[in-house]
Amino acid sequence: MLPTDLMEKVEKNLSHKRYLHSLGVAYTAASLAMAHKLDADQAFLAGLLHDCAKELSVDKTLKYCKEHNIVLSEEYKSCFGVVHGLTGSFMAREKYKICDEQVLSAIRYHVSGKPDMTSLEEMIFIADYIEPSRKFSSEEFDLMRKAAFSNLRLGVYLVSESICSYLLNSGNKVVSEIVETRDFYKEYCRNAGLI
Image (cartoon, rainbow, N blue to C red; front, side):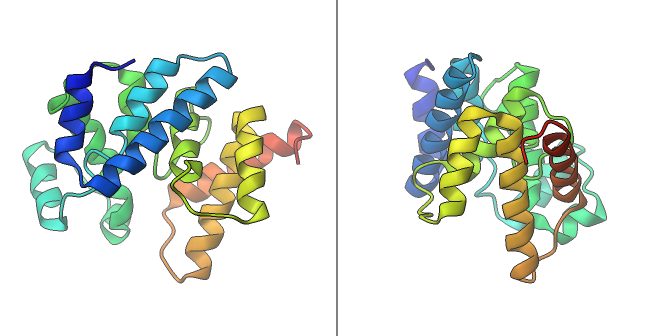
């Protein structure tokens, strides 16, 4: 498990609600890792830090990007909710001294996903959506939670499909990465006979 000083530092830098969500993601990711015989400590760390840049204002985020030579695509500028994954990977390295490239990549892609993610990336992508403080009670979310513990790729497909549907139905912009993620995992699951 993580040293308590790191957890305390994360807690001090996030709102109480965001910290509880981050703990939920960390424990869910660690549980997924144990279910799939993967590194639970690594999953916990990525889950704990996945939203470390989430609460920066737009102005502070843009300033952070400028200071760290982070170039935002026009698509990211128009869908600003995805930017904290990118900035969070930089912040985890700089502020929290994380050197594990797999953890940094999982933080980077936890919002939008990408085709053919690593297992750690998949776990953080899923855990962010299904962790217990998310107060979803529909059959769809029960199915996502069960699927994730039996097959990570099926879990990613169901989560990405749900995200795309929600964004489209609510009139929000959908970044191309999440659509590419959904399409890749849908095809994989079809070919594997999972759907």
